Length: 113
Image (cartoon, rainbow, N blue to C red):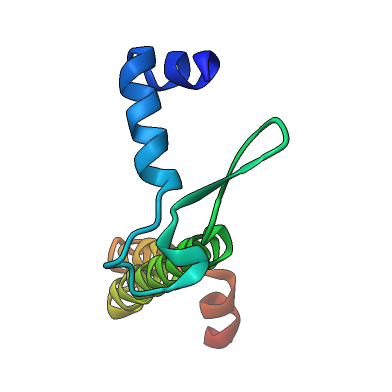
């Protein structure tokens, strides 16, 4: 328990009281797993009673946020593509500028004969 108190940065007495609360049955618990206890003693430490429930909940939240971020990136990419396709590209702009300045391409010179 000394290691747990040190890790939690609390005194030994405070840690002992918290462990007693977590190890005791909770009549108001809705899960009714292990009479509402939050942790149970195992050799070498403690185990969170509903660990799998919380772990899967967290993974589901992570997956949700991954999907949201992917959608956000796709929308940004679509906006960028739309912006780029709305005006002339760099090559088209240079070609128009050269044509207006009187420069002719090899294709144009070939069409005159």
